[in-house]
Image 1 (cartoon, rainbow, N blue to C red):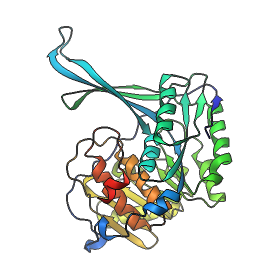
Image 2 (image 1 turned 45 degrees about the vertical axis):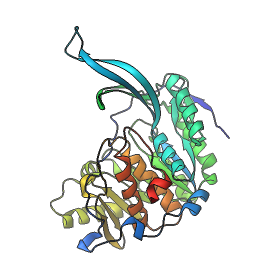
Image 3 (image 1 turned 180 degrees about the horizontal axis):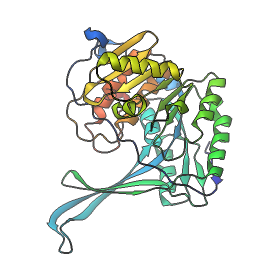
Length: 352
């Protein structure tokens, strides 16, 4: 069932979170230097259990717009290339890209966020429906601009990106919070995708609602105010975000100490740090586990964090433990960075 809501005046968003390349070709390894199993050797990807999993994604929703063209001359008006647009493509971005990846991995997913009453917002609704994502979108009809990232590409490289954005207002956020409380019982796991555009302004309350219902919460964070995420089940900062949260570390032991301190302060079950070419490191009450990065050729890191988060959510909802979920997420990240733009990884690609 599609949920359409309307709300009031908007505010302003902040810069988005970038994806993290997963560049190393080294085999997977556990922390402490002990060789680990490759993803094919861990528990097989639980496709049947994934099909029964119901995951709700809440967060900042974007439209990624691509204009592909030919470049064969320089403008006489300024020293810039002239792009003759030959093809246009729109893709779901931000939290919507997380939801799209969850569908591609075979799970059921709902998407809750705020869009504007504009062309980009209507386009997101269409793409969401076409992707098989359950629509719980809240429409801010009194001023919000849907976040739109328009990229112009020529000769297989990005030449320009133009951003349009304006965050949701208080009325829209109140409606979003009420909608979450109404629909959360229909889902097994909650994913919060924070791009600092305003949809997760009330994230503390969202986590409280999920905690009261016994529903696990996975958070992809933004910024340095990590106390906002206290009580979540898992938080997945990238290397830069981890430095924002705990400062720079001098060694692996120092990082482990800082990570475990943060995990305990936030009352998390697990903390997963995605570390670009250094792979991923998981911290739990049992200790530290690590997988080295796994990728063939890095083409585009846009949305790689979304794919990692989606794979973690599906694997966890399907019953895998944290290390196994991390191993599959690492493999998915290695696949998606070889694709252009915000892309998905299917269950078939993941297990082939």
